[in-house]
Every structure is written in C-alpha cells, then in structure tokens.
Amino acid sequence: MQIVRNYSDAELISALKHPTEMDVAISLIYKEYYALLENYVINNKGSKEDAADIIQETIVAFIGIVEQDKYRGDASIKSFLYAITRNLWLAELRKRSSADNRNRIFEKAKDDTEQATIQHLVQREYFAVIQQFFEKLGTKCRQLLMLVYYEDLSMSDIVQQMPDYQNEQVLRNKKYKCMKQLEQMIQNDQSLRTQLKNALRYAG
Amino acid sequence: MQDNSTDDMAEMLIRYMDGELNAAEREAAEKLLREDAALQERYQYFLAAKRAIKAQALKQRVQAVHQAYMQEVKPQETHPANVVKPASFPKRLMRVAAILIVVIAGYGVFQYTSTTNQSVYNDHFIAYQLPVNRSNEGPDSIDALYNAGNFNAVISTFNELQQKNQKDYFLAAQSYLQLNNADAAINLFRQVEDINNNSTDKYFVQETDYYLLLAYIKAGKIDLAKKQQDKIISNKQHLFYAKAKNISSIKLMMLKWKDK
Image (cartoon, rainbow over all chains, first blue to last red; front, side):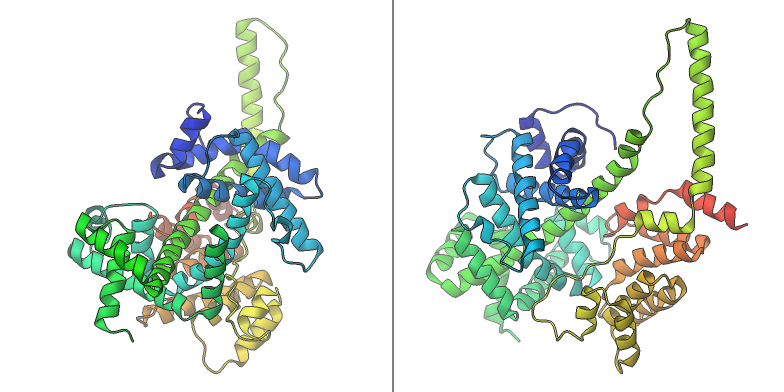
C-alpha cells in the first residue's frame, strides 16, 4: 500500500469518484484516520476486531455518500468519518444490547451523518438479499455485471475481456438478460419488495 | 414467464438507467415512468440491483485495502524504531547496516519459525457469511444452521439430504473448515467444482476457488494451493483476486520447505 502524496479533502473526494484512483484514496483514509476511528470504538466498549469491522463499514458508507453527491463538504472528511463511525458503532451496540429495532435510535435523525447512517443501514439489509440473488446468477453474468456496473468499462473494452461474446451487441443482450433475471428474483420476493418500498419512502 | 412487451419494457428501463437512450427515447421513457406506477416500481428494482452490485464490489475493495493496511502498517506499531545516537558517518553507516542485517535476519528467522499452515490460513480466512434472506426455510435448514454457527448440525443435515445442490456441498465444506477438518472440506469443495463443471447452472464457483485454496493451505497441500492461487490471480476479474493475491508467495514457499 503506497501513498504517493497527500490529498486535500476536495482531491480525496474527487479520487473516491474515480475507479482508478479509489484504492489510493481509501489507503490514504486508512493512513490518516484509522487510528482515530479505532480509538473511538475501543474507548467505547469495542475491541480491535469491532473497530476493524466498523471502520470498513464506515468507509463503504462514506464512499456511497460521496458517489451520490451527498457529501457537501460542510464538515471535514475527518469529522464526517468520525460521525459515521460513532453512529454505526452506537447502532451496533444497540443491536447487541437489545432485540429492539436497531434503527430506532435514529428514528429522528438529527443531522446529515445520522441520516446517511440510517440510509446505509437500511440499504445494507436489502443489498444483502439482492447480493444473494446476484450470487445465483451464472459466472458470466456476474462477471459481466461487475465489469459494467462497478468497473464502469465500455462494451468494447468488455468484449476484449470476455472473448466468448462475439461483439458488443451480443454482450448488451447478455447484460439485459442478466439484469432481467435479477429483477425477476427481486419481483418474486415479497419481503424484499416491502423493504425496498419502505426504504424509498424513508429516503423521501 | 414474461411476454415480449414486458421484456421490451425491462430492456427500455435498463437502457434508461444506463444512459443508453437518445434524447427522444429518454423523454418518452420519463413520461412513461411518470404515468405508470408499476413501471416506476420495476425501475426501482433495477436501480436497487445495480447499486447492490456496486456495493458488493466496493465492500470487497475496501476489505482488500484493509488487509493490506493491517499487514503493512500495523506491524510497525509493535516494532518501534531503534534510537541511534549521533556518530560519525562511516560508523553510523556501519551501525545501520549491522542493525539492518540483524533485523532482516531476525525477521527472516521469525517469519520462518512462525509461519505455519495454520497461521497462513488464519491470516486469510474470513468466515463465509450467507446473506440474510427472510424467505428462507425454517430453523433446521442448512442455511439457518450455518448462519447460527452450528457446524456439526450442518454436516449432519447435509449427510441426510437425499438431493444435494452446490450450496449444500459448499456450506458443508465451510463447516468442515470451521471444524478444522481440511481434508473433508477439500473433498466437498471438489464436488462443488465437479457439479459446476457438469451443469449449466453454476453456483459458488469463485467462492469455491478461494476457499479450496485456503483448505489446501490448512491441509499442508502447498503445491495444490499454489496452483489454485495461480488460477485465481490469472483472472483479474475474479471476485477473490485481491484476497488470493494477498497470500504471500514467500510464505507459501516457506511452508513447502518446511514440509520437505
């Protein structure tokens, strides 16, 4: 893990939005803020392992917020990450200490980070179900959808990596087919559909 | 089974979501979405699917950076730098060289003695977690038993199943790994591979690749582990590419030497 240079907050945000720079940006977040965030969890009844889990979750949540352009820069990245870690850890403590709804603590979100944390927790629930459906797709489908939606590669680049498919149109058709399969599995899961509806209502 | 018009609508929604429509098509799609609540709902399913795929990949990416950070940055905290008193340049150079030799040799000896099949396995094993699915069967299903960490019960239930699919074999293999029976785990992971090789429906393929690699390490089958690692890292798109790459080739070599 090599940090080439320091980034300002604005540069870090920009790097997090670009797949090619993202690893460096995440590494820098680790280097700069891991100890701070770890201390918070450990000083609040957590172990090093708890801290490791919560910090990873914090970074995933933070990148999600950045990708949706919901980080407005009112607070520094350091304060924002600290607040997300605190919220996630409080939610985890709450979950461990009671069978109560883990999100009840945030029913009335006081600020942006609480709002973002709730959305992350709600999303995490239904993403887990969809990700299970995703795992049921064939290997080619999974590979293709990852290349399209995560690596953000063009169809011409993907054709190079998946030579079984003769041309871009064949690949596009494959993508539609894979997404339709995934959508069909979502359609068939009443509980997931309800979760999604509730999540959308919450997101307003 | 959906009819063609439903299929066409799905394709239109995906193309709209992915920004593949021209201006006129996009306007028409937006009008349809405003007027048709059911279509809007389907669009939300596609969006959720796309975001869940991205979230899964992102989680793996953060995990890979986390592991790299833990391996490369954290050990420094337990080895504070030595304080060297000011001395003349040649003396200082010789001291630094001597310290380096001692540190490197000591580190090498430490690594060699402390590297075992189990330590390498422990460093890279992350318990496989089944995603939560509320539509699952009852508490005695293999999924539920596995999620509850009841690995002996997973194996008993697996042995009683008349018809077994890839997931059953995979979870039973995971349970054997958790119970430190690497040979049994290898046997079942290979059966997942066999089923996938002979079936058009392929499940748990890449997960099996990685956990079979770990099972080989745990069982001390280092040649097979190395081949398995090479197989995974030859495919940069492999879901476990970063994890497999993180397994040190030097440590695998040490394990092989120790085995001789």
